[in-house]
Image (cartoon, rainbow, N blue to C red; front, side, top):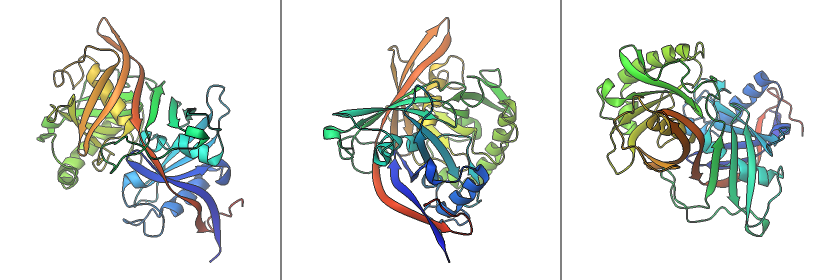
Length: 364
């Protein structure tokens, strides 16, 4: 069988991993691109046995990079979420964990030039329009992957990557509260529908008869819960002006409970049909904003910080995730200025990935 070779870099970004491509090496047509990405990942099998996916939503993600034509940005980051089994590709969301690897990958690809001792890369998230400044360690003009920064959900330590997010409010729906309400009642459940970095439907775990401290295995095994919450998600998508979201991974879902391990609040992030093993970078920003905004479903569950910027520590199944939020609150109205996180990334492999030539004849 004749095959086409496509250059790629395989990276862990935060608590996710996947292939990073130069846009010039892939089809421009989205339908054709989807067919190629499904073949690359091996979507259609629970283990992605005929591709390089890992059989989980956090390992079937794709980053596509290019030089930006935006006056502000250096690099455009286009994200694709490939389903594990359904041979579907969703271009609506973005991914903050995969974003953690964008600056190193852009340096590896030669899309940006390194500085010393660190390099600031201005990134435009094409899917949502968000702007992010990533700062990576580049002593002597070389990318440094080793370091002493640990993030929960990833073994060992690595060099820190600082991410500062801007323009994240209403990136998909155009509004902080897309339904027009701070709290909506959907199928008997009180929920806050917010759009900060990621459109989300956020509710208290207790409303579903849960503690909020369940493990991912426990939640994933509770299919009655997921059936119930999927109906809520579909209705919330309609109320948020997103139409029929049955085939989309957004809006995502968040469950909240009082803190248990010294954090600001306990959280579970649903992707949306399984529990995230840790926490999504984009979801963390939305949950942090929910905590800081008066009268949401998070009201009364966490001690409100007095300092600005505020550090919001989200407890999750693998540990904790800190979000540094710069904001204003005047007359009880919350206004997000920016949100920052520290993540890590590591290059795992590079070379060519192959797809059958009858799917696509690569350009090289």
